[in-house]
Image 1: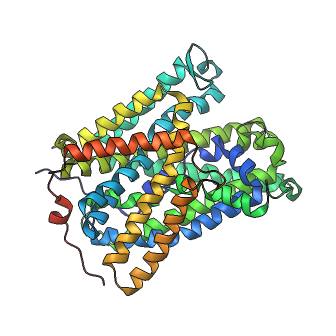
Image 2 (image 1 turned 180 degrees about the vertical axis):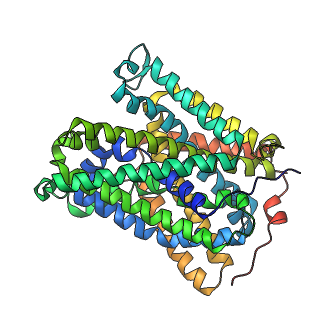
Image 3 (image 1 turned 135 degrees about the vertical axis):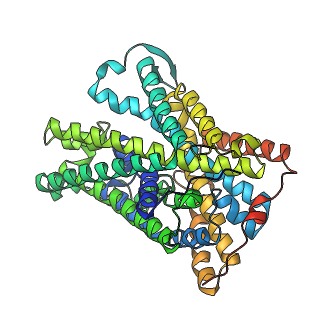
Length: 451
């Protein structure tokens, strides 16, 4: 049987993980972050969220060594508990990756519209008060076709593209930080918080799972490491991506608030660009260019992770077996790749408004996956591993509860509950239709003992 190509190195894993975390949110929804928490609340929310994710990152770094499987959470929870738990964890985590793809395909039109205003012409229809334009749909489908083709060709090509995109983005971001740091004022931070300090930090902390999801994607490509890959390098990639990603969010919020009064820029839309527009139009253009590069890399990274999870579900029988097949020449999960490309292209026609509720569910879905992995290590690990994993499990559970407990600021609305219900129901249907599938994770991946 043809297996996935083994080509990935440590830096490849880092760029995939960091790329899956940081997209264009720092441009598109910066105004929301500032309105939620003010500059201090937003920075505290992301800083606290990053630190809280460290024990979860540890759980992933240990489980990927035990079970280097494309299914990630599916394999971990199945091995520790049972196949039902594995499917539930994997199905939820798949949503966290999957929703990013159409979101970025839609967002590229909004960002490109800054350079080409003609993209917002030829209106097709409106959904939820948001107009869907034909040129933006065409651009979104074109980007989807490019990412799909890239992933179809092979992981080496995909990783090479991801490395260049990540390096370019970090270089552009460094330029923005240096220039912004020279042209702002600390007085622009006032008022420091958008609400009471604890509410400000809490409102931002709630969305951290959605914007920090990605560091754990390392495990989804663990079957594709190069020969003689050192297993400890999984942990290096995970923690480097986690800390740099969290640091990026804190720094970009600080720079935007430092460059211009945040209450004015937050009310203007595209707060990041509005702040740098005060320096020069050239800086605003650089912001949009950096966001476009970042958008493509997060699209690609989440596409890679989602394709591996679909592949794993097809391989073990929870989805049709065709999705578990590997291309003989390219050694890629070709059917899973084509499925994701088709889903993403179809969602582009829904516009951004259709994706809002599902994106909110993404935070909850990621927390469920993190909880499953931490719980798996708590059961399978050594005493030290269990202690850290239990902390991670508590953190993940709290992140999940923040979104679903009534009365907590920022909890699910009816639209989010409907989106979650549809996704869970779809998963139950697939599970029942394939309930006699063999438990291939347990059969193929015996637990490795702790060192």
